[in-house]
Image (cartoon, rainbow, N blue to C red; front, side):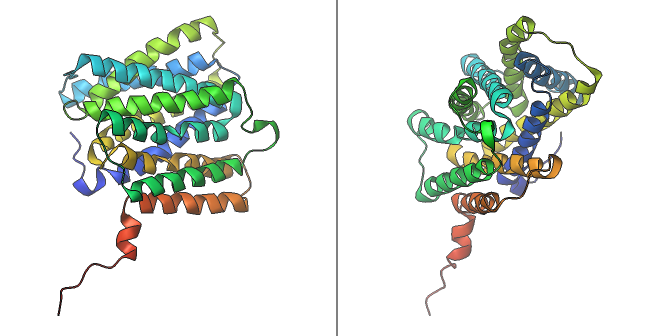
Length: 299
């Protein structure tokens, strides 16, 4: 199996997974309106299962389900969250949908305190708040006209996806003590596919050849992002610490919109990007270590 240096196992992998999640959202938005949400959800998880069908024989490993109940809950919460998230992308566009979904660390941090006994120190709390505000500024700057955060199915689905994501991550963190990343990802794909299948059958639309590449890009980026995310969450201090770094996903979504969709680089977006990155540095403890010099020995 691929060996990942210890210094890269936590925060660096989460940064990369955040970019890939933004790429997944971009691809999902590119087929919005042409395919039903159920079809897009099923495509994502079907590609994930194909990956695992190749992964296990190549690595000589097998799925491990030490706690089946928790394993199932992780898949159910995760699958439901993805469906709601894709409904938000379909109704609100990728920017505001990503912003709503990016609130999941707030839900996960609260659940982590009560269910896992995790503690949120001052750096984590202020860092989480700063990155959330920064990500909101970045996305809000790209929203124009009727694509704003208006009440409706899309906004409700985006908010619900954040709550479900928080619950799914709590289950993931609990499982990572004795369950490997691929086994957790298997739960995500199996129950996500089962969740999306009835909606796909109910609203089936013709698949055009021009949709193959966006769907493949969405599936592959989501597989890579989810595997990295699941692996890395076992190597961060707490659920809140990991959640801070994933707040980069909305910022990356804005960047992709600017580069690939020609969205203007507005001043508010630049301010938000700075706030977002500053929150990540502060919340992970890097900025405090840089600002406060190490203690010197007494003369």
